[in-house]
Length: 455
Image (tube, rainbow, N blue to C red; front, side):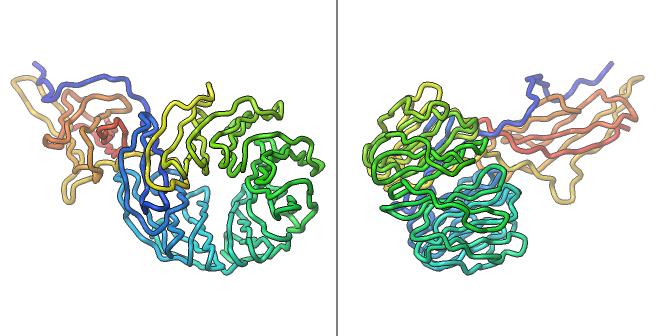
């Protein structure tokens, strides 16, 4: 007679980890970050940070968010699994925009009033380098291979080029008055810099020689710029004139002008490059441009003073921060309609997304995670494995899923003893077990894994 398992097994067919997505919104005048669950479009946390948060950058794995506190001299680091501040990093004066390397190892922060860029080591959350650049560094952009970082310096009329291997300035490129935003072509060959007011220009830099190869006229107070995924076109928002200029990047000439709303401040392009969403600060609208037609196909009424605009990684939704109405509009890109309006803090600016996962369960100090045992009952021997673990560090974990060789065999509530017995195993066979923490929102951690042979 076989001894039955002490726990009921459940075969739920879960074959992959699930991570919920959050939208983090920096509320400048509330000194907070609102965390929106994108599956429900509800605020699930409000986090106090530093003075005047304006920009948020998340690591590629979604585990941390770095918040630039523009009215102070520091960056707040948020653990996105617990929605708590885990570090406050001193940087330069008025940290504004920031970018993270593709491997997540470093965050570069432009200190707008400090004429410097701070380099944060994300493993230690300390500043590893401070790089002197021009006056009022504003925007930052990596080349696709990550080897160079271009920084526009608003007052000194130039662009600093940082070698990211040595974290030193390799060259400084004079472009002309008030360089603001910058975008680099997908092949990394050219950088496009918006600069000036009236007249305005777009300066084109050859990234191999770091020389200006063209100055494109015909724009007015150019600010946002995006480049299509194929690199064939650049779109420039004109703060004066209420339109978007389309540049053919092969000839560096404006080939179309698209009327939008008043004061187009920020633009975002869908991952497939088919549509561009333009926030019109002065109109309280978002214009949707079809890039194949170079025309507006929809005008969407949002909140007052739409500022930042971000598209979810899968391209399904657009999040717009409305700085004068203290809310965020959520647009469905399939219908170009607002599906939610989320109240956040005062003067919401930067938005960033994070795929959030709970912390995994842990091995207990001095206790083996898996033990092979056997029981003899009359003429029958039961070979079984005992698993034991310590809880996840994430608040809100409700249960733990147990897998053997990739197949779920059970579930243990977080309130009970964190142990599981897997009976009727084959003597001498090696098994691989994984334990996954699940929180109240259904988010799953990375697995804790044990491999053991039945005896």
